Image (tube, rainbow, N blue to C red; front, side, top):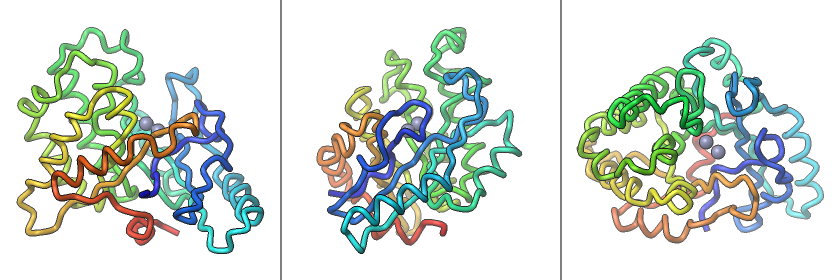
Length: 266
Ligand SMILES: [Zn+2]
Ligand SMILES: [Zn+2]
């Protein structure tokens, strides 16, 4: 089973799962990616900044208790891009002790995309365009400090009326520009299995994989990885076999832990 590169523990504002729930004995790995989100509109506007040093201490304790001398611990963060507080975000992202950074785009103009009322006045095209422009900007600004672009379909989770095929027809050029920017910045593209199988966006990822596999990139494919985005640990690795099968149908293989390890900052 490939490693799960997107998981939330009780160090995230929206999860109660203990760190120890993510002890991956098969990969000899303990890895989490808790939310680093400034002015978080779905948490009363708080700055959610996990105590990464404390996570590292707790992971070390779990490692010693595990009886697995080869267990590796990885303190990660899911970094929510925030155009309005970019300077402060850039400083926090550079915090020592974060080894893996997922780059996410949860909010637009101060409101998470999950707050559907806040974005209700935007038509589907404006909605998609605003989002993809934001992603391109964020990948250019922060991508060099991150390792993974998370859930590229995120806002479409909350507008199920937008068809993935229509999206790729209308915005295929922008999506290709985002993939090219990921390539330049060394970002791995996440296949988010929560989006695929909880929110029914498998077709979005099928088309994304087709875009990645079909790039004229001189033989250097943009790598992909799997993330369950689990908040309750019960969803850890959910849908991985099916998502890996989808990637394989495009000739792509999600990165395993050993592949990812070389990309981390220490
Ligand atoms: Zn997220
Ligand atoms: Zn997440």
